[in-house]
Image 1: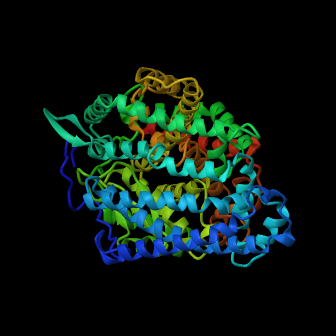
Image 2 (image 1 turned 90 degrees about the vertical axis):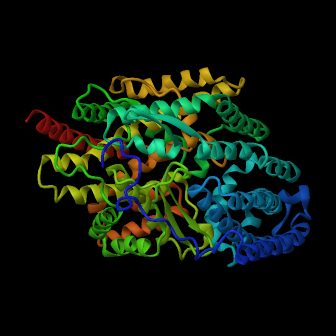
Amino acid sequence: MTGTTLKPDVQVQGPAWDLSDEYPAVTAGEVDADLQALDDLLDRIAAINPRLSAHGETLETLAVADAGDTISSACEVFTLAEQSNRLLGNLSVFASCLLSVDAEDDEAQVLQGRLLGYRKRVAELLQPSQQFLDRASDAVVDAYLDNPTVSASAFSVRHDRQRRHERLTLAEENLIAGLSQDAIHAWGRLYTQLSGTLNCEVMVGNEVQILGIAQASGLMQKPDQRLRHAAWQGINAAWETHQETCAAAINAIAGWRLETVDKRSARQAVHFLDAPLHVNKIRRATLDTLLAVCEASAPVARRAALAMARAGGREKLGPWDLRAPAPQFSSSGEAMPFDEALRLIAEAYAQVHPEMGDFVNMVAERRWIEGTVTHRKRPGAYCTRFPKSRNPRVYMTYTGSSSDVITLAHELGHAFHSWVMRDLPECQRSYGMSLAETASTFGETTVRDALLTRAPDAASRFDIMWEEMAALPTFMLNIPARFSFEKTFYERRAERPLRPNELKEMMAQAWNEWYADSMSEPDPMFWASKLHFYISGLSFYNFPYLFGYLFSTGVYLKRDDFEGDFYSSYVALLRDTGRMTAEQLASEHLQVSLDKPAFWEETIASLESRVARFEAVVAEITEG
């Protein structure tokens, strides 16, 4: 496959996934049946809520002896809410999956629109229950958690109560929940829709071609440096034509969050980082320690970037090179067919334990992976799961590059994480992104190391090590640059909305601070082209990737320290991600403290030795 080939080779691209075991179609009777069942469940919650809200403003002083009916009502609502969220989540995942493959799917858009009203209603109906759990005394909540129907939720309830000082009145919370769907979330949906329908012009050979953003983004994984550069320029030019729209969206999303933070600061000061830290179940001290160690260790990641540049015959990398395939020093330069990539991943996973290899094969056999190449697909890759069946789905655009192989290994790691937790109560299956990357990055490292053991020569080792080295500047430079930009943006947005040129300047500054002399130029339009800044459900979406990358690497390094069967210990760690904080998980399973530098420094030190080996391989194949 040449660097200018655009038409996907049907032998290379991945398969289409099968969603029919969830719903045959958007218009199927099963969809209407679930919507009707959801209506019935929500009506039952609405009927119970007056009993749950009977104590109103006296809830804080309610004695356990007088709380029997309130506790009973809260337990009923918990059970009904679990069932409601399962149905709403299933329908939402279905619509999202369809729109990922075809952003112009009218029927899926209609379904997604219908679900907005249900989300509003669910958010409003669960406010009385949330008020009870936040405002009741410890004694009353303990009595509630003694009920076996809700006891499994103890960790999440007590974790959420740490932010009880932020809660507003029931009427105010209902107002925020109701308005958010057509405010902050509407801006997020606008950006998502734009990214799925936006086209750009790319010079391919001697011809300008009109491509979707996902297609053009795929070109930045091609070996032709000029094509990658052209794709990057085309993508940025397309986003520049919509920079006012993107600026309006990112300012509105941040403005909404800052305004709600201000409203929630009546009893105790609330910071805009409090919510993402809480959701990710890590403390600010841990994040500060992680970033400080990463900043001190940035030269390690820059060395990796510079070695990658030397391998390509250049002094520095350009922004268009960050997803480039390895320069070819061996004869194995052809794109890898999907089936072959899947076999490699299954074999590597099986070296950890046969069950992991069997899982990969099962996912493929059941057609739970979407890997086709079409112009209507949205960019990116992800893993999701259907709450009713608890079965995962993996989404990506597979074109056969080495980066695609690693992406597939990464997303299958997410799927495995979800799979080993499938029998747990739903309230114990929700984990922050800081821990969500544990299994995915572990899967990547497993695949790379397994491949390295059978590499016959330096050129083959280089091909395998390339993706690992590409991860260092991605996680240790790009992710911190995103965090730096976003944090500075929120600090300045508190004063006024920022113009596109200011956003470009801020992004370029963050880029230059972290990449330093390892990058030929910054990517000033990254604030517009990166979906993560526009995810309305969660701010600061990026730093968990850095945490997850290094935490998972640390877990991988400590695999020989586990007593007895590593696989059992590893699965136990994954299963606890939904019922422990990151600090508790590390202490319980790894015997380390995450708010101290030692664990992070030890992990990065191990990466330095890998960089040194890569530099030696680059020298051998370029100078030999």
